[in-house]
Image (tube, rainbow, N blue to C red; front, side, top):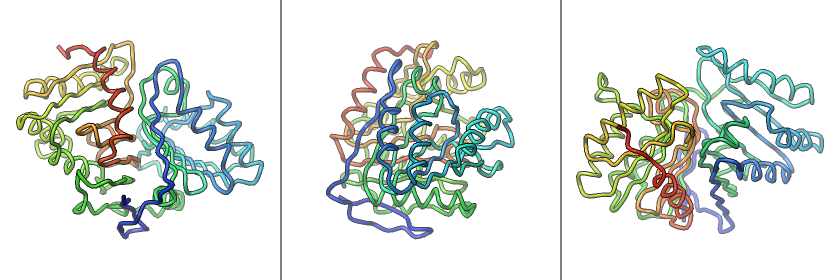
Length: 352
């Protein structure tokens, strides 16, 4: 098994360590498996703890207590949160957390306000990585359907730790972490870290390559999906087109989407995309409007999983700082996510 990794701007293939541990984290309403895993991982930190978040509120006190305890025992803690030059509410939500951490002697600050950090990333001792769709607030922890993962591997850890380093230092220029995807094959056991910044589009490049190689099925759980009628050559439309093409060649293609009932413009965009896909042969279901399905999850042939923070819209795919990961030809990893998808699908409804 190999992992595709980057060191600064270079791309290399590196042998994966035999002791690698992958722990799927499925977030269901009323419980927070993610919280438990992060708290355990933070509690085990010995040297460093780096946290990169788009939304970090002070709701879950036990998590912040664990972070402060880690700092108090000598762990180097850095927390980088999103500051927005287009949505003051984002900055306002994150500012009390930064002030709170600074008051406890922790290095915490905002990112570049010109670039949206939509990632949800924790790196412990540059070895353990927890990432996915979960923001740090009670609503996200306990009232939403989420898909996250914990990976204990030195190489994967170094990839995301280096990514964090460059964000922290302000040296992550556009296109800096672009991944070479030519050697990625659907039948080769791979773990592919997918760090993103402006001008990289690693996630869609890998996704489209894997869609083209899919043989039986593509199952998707996605919080936000857009179809851009006025931008036919957009990356988002390429993804939707790849789903339609996979359905046309006989694959089972099913997409489960959030209704986005709490946000009018997002709800309209999701419904438009759902109808477009449904009209072109893709099976689509939406969740109950009272529920938020915040996961960003793709399962291919019940063997390959791509998950993380990236939604299927322009800014998420092309302009944000995002963190995703692909587990290729690893059916044991895919199985719990496939079960999660099927549970959601059974409760879904037609987009109308």
